[in-house]
Length: 625
Image (cartoon, rainbow, N blue to C red; front, top):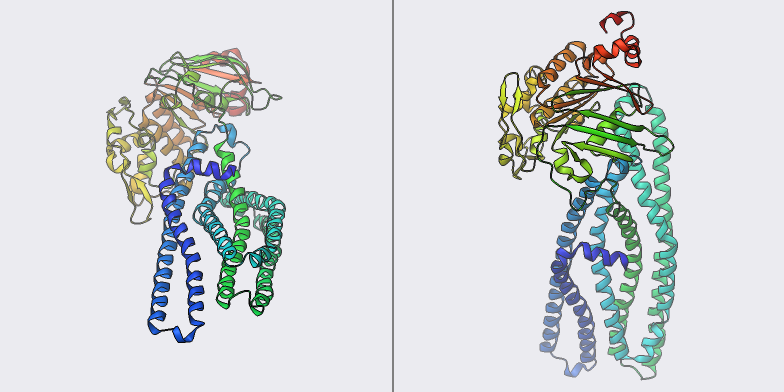
C-alpha cells in the first residue's frame, strides 16, 4: 500500500487519465456480470419449448451481441487509456530519476557501476508500466468481478454459495505465503540484473584493453559465471511460481467440483432449477478466474515492488552538495580564486589536503605540481564544488562558493580533463557543447590573437527545437545549426585543432563515435580545449590537458594557452613541467600540503622538491630546467 500510495502521488498528473481507464474497467466488470444473468434467463425461457419463439431468440441474441460489444469497447478503453497513462508516467519517472542522478554529487558515484545505474534508469522504471497498465487495472477489475459474482451467487442460492467459498481461504493463505517467500527472490533478481548490466558495460567500454591483453577467454569465463548466476536466480523464482500457479488452479477447481456435486443433488431434490444451476456455474467460472488472476498479480506486484524500491533508492538519495535556500547568483566576475585553510579527505583515515591556502589573482596562471596522489585534481574538483571541503573555504571573486548557486558557480569555469569525454555526435556539436548548455546565459567576448571572438547573445539563438539526423535517425539539438560556425572554427584554431578537423572527410560535421572513438587522444584533447575556449569563462582549468599530445602539439597548445593568459585565470595541473614553466605561480604539493610556491626560476634556485622533480623528468638534459 505504501508503494501504491507513493506511486499515485508521483503519477498525480495522470489521475484523470487513470480515472477514465477505471471507467472502462468498471463498465467491463459490470457487463461480465450481466451476460451470465442474461444466459440464465435464456435457459429458463427454453425450459418450456411451447412458449419459446423465434422473436425471443432474436431478442436474447441481440442483447447479448450489444452486451459483448459494449464490454469489448470498455475493455479496449481500459487497456488503451491505461497504457497511455503508464508510458507517459514511465517517461516522466525516467526523466525524474535522471534529473536526480544529475543532482547527486560525485561521491555518490564512487562505488556505483554505470551499468547498474542504467538498469535502474531503464529496466526498473519500465516495470512501472506493468504496474499501471496491467497489475492495477487487473486488480481493480477482478476485485469488482469477485465482489459482484459473490452477490449474484448468494442471490441464486445461499447454501450453495457458502459451500463454493470453501477454497477461498486456502487461496488467500497460499497467496500470502507465496508473497512472503518469493518477494525476496524478485528483489534479488533485480539486483543481479543490475550487476550483470554493470559487468557488460565495463567490458564493452574496455573492449580495446580486453583484446589488446588477450583476455577474451578469461572474460568469457567470468561472463559464464555471471550469466549462469542470473539464470539461477530467475529459475529459482519461476520454479516457485510453477508450484504456486498450478496449486491455485487446483484449489479453485475444487469449487467447480463442489457445484457439480451439491448443485446436482439440489436439482435432483427439486430445490434448484436447471436455469439456476447453469447461471451458478457460469458465475462460478467468473469467480475463480479472477481469483487465479489475483494470485498471478501477486507475482507481478512483487516484480514491480522490487524495481520500485531500487528506483526510490535513487530518488531518496541525498546529494552531499546542496544549495543553500538563500544561495546567490554569482555574476560574471574577474576569476579570482581563494583557498582559505582548506582541508579535505575522501576517507577520514587518509587525509588528502591539510590546511591549504593560496590565491589565484584574476588573469594569473597557477600551476599545481607534485607526485601522484597529493590532491592536485582534488583541488580543481573543490573549485567546481564537486565536493565540499571538510574545513576551510573556497571563494570565487570573494564569494564563498557554498553560498552560490551551483549553476552560476559552474558558469564561471571551463575544464579540460585528462580523461576527455566527447559525445557521440559531430565535432562541431562537441565544440559548441558548453555554449549550447548555457540556458540563456551570455558570455563575454573572447579575446584571441586573431581578434575579438564575440559570443554575446548567442544563447538567444539556442532554443529547444529538435530535429532528427536523417542518417542516424537520432534526435539532436538545433544549437549548432543556429550557432555561427565561424565562432566554432575560431575556437578550434586557438586550440590548434582546425587543421586536422578540416582534413577529415566531413570537416566539422564529422561524426566522432562514442567517446570520440574515431579520434586520437591528442585530437580529443584539442577539441576539449576548443570547447573550453568557446565557452569564454573567466576561469579555465587544464587538468593534464597536454598529457596525450606529442611535443610539437604540446608546444602549439602551450602557445594557445599563453595567448589566453591575462584574459582569464588559468589553473594548470601537469606532470610534464614544460607545460607549467611559464606559470605566474607554481604550487608544489607534497603529503597534502603546499611545500613550495613561486615562479619556475625561483623554485629552481631553492633546490627543493620542484627542482628535484625537474631533474628527475629531464635527466641528463636537466639544463633545460
